Length: 73
Image (cartoon, rainbow, N blue to C red; front, top):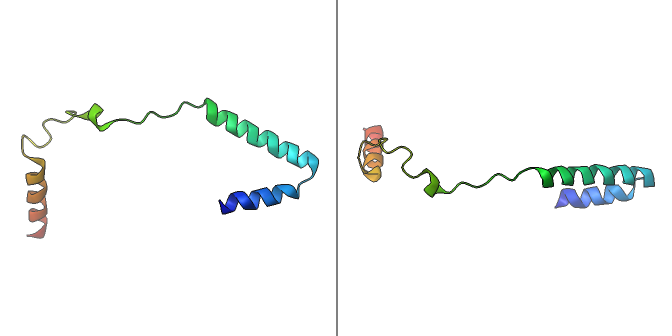
């Protein structure tokens, strides 16, 4: 919040017309953000089974352990 405090102090030094311009700008920015659709967060369950043949039936932990073993040899 240091930036916000700095901006608020700076806004106090603006002339009345400059403050109106700043207020209009900020109002437009907020309205744009409110009208933009929010990205829906995906749930991990929604992608379950997306790559069923990735490990060719091998257990994931076995695959990771084997991979790590291959790297250290």
